[in-house]
Length: 246
Image (cartoon, rainbow, N blue to C red; front, side, top):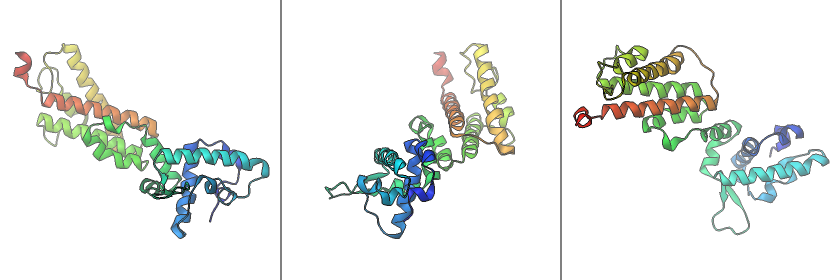
């Protein structure tokens, strides 16, 4: 079985990692061992010499404590769970833990916490979540704003020839479009048109034409914006002008 030392032999580098970062290495070790022979996991074995490896004597104790923090994080996040029917502290790798599998999977999972799934529009979740979880942030942003574009086109009954900034300008024109709230001041109607057009022009179009490198936090902000604008589109689509004017 590989050890933590096999993956990163430098103790200082390990101790510089946050628990969730070190957890990816730990999952890699656990899942690798389980692919050969099912391992029996508890806090003692998880922090033992057999798991940690041959670090210098002065580094072993701090690393054991760091691994204890990792154990706590893995259990709290549902990646490890107590073995049913056992009363001796043995744990097993959960389905989520097996799915995340390694450093890359754990990083994507940690980043997913940044994205408030429960508050996002359902179609944004459906289209964007898998790509975001894979760490494919530019694709997830493109998909979010594509959903916004499609929703605008459908709500305003526009043609496939209408897209991007031109579509947003037509759909939210301050005087000529049914998606515009005529009860709002002209300045607010114009501002919403600018917002919709600017969002598609800034966040959807660049991702259509070239690779854009994004981090998780920046992608989250963009996806949340797309979700918010999509909810506005749906609210305007379902708006009853006669009811509002009565």
